[in-house]
Every structure is written in C-alpha cells, then in structure tokens.
Length: 65
Image 1 (cartoon, one colour):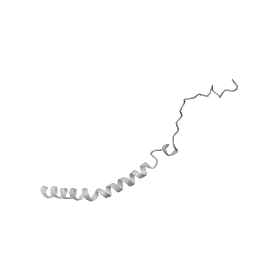
Image 2 (spheres, rainbow, N blue to C red):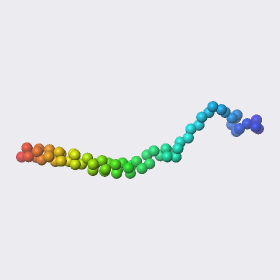
Image 3 (tube, rainbow, N blue to C red):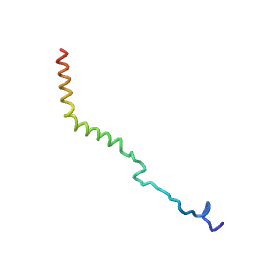
Image 4 (cartoon, rainbow, N blue to C red):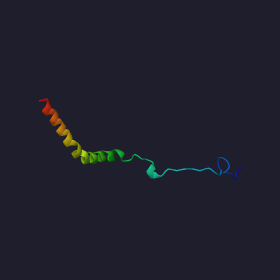
C-alpha cells in the first residue's frame, strides 16, 4: 500500500478539463460596453427615425386643429 498514490491506484482513461482565464468572467465589461453600444446605435439611427416621427406628429397636430 505504501507504493500507491494517495486515495488509491493511479487511474487511466480519466479526462480532466480546465477553463481558460479569459472564460472565467464572460460578462466582464458587458454593462460598460452596452451603454456605449446603445449610444452608438441610437446616434446612427436617429436621423432615420426622428424626421418621420416629427412629421407624423405635426400631421396629427395639424389634423386635430
């Protein structure tokens, strides 16, 4: 018994897996990046959405008068 490994005999065919350090916290910086990503996307789409909405609001306002 003295020549065996602690806990029993050495086993073969056992596979162990580890996790890379960059995978430990997959959401690191997600909140910070989300804020600036939303800002960038909003700024890029603003001029496609705002003028039709303003025009629609003005037409509804004019029709209501």
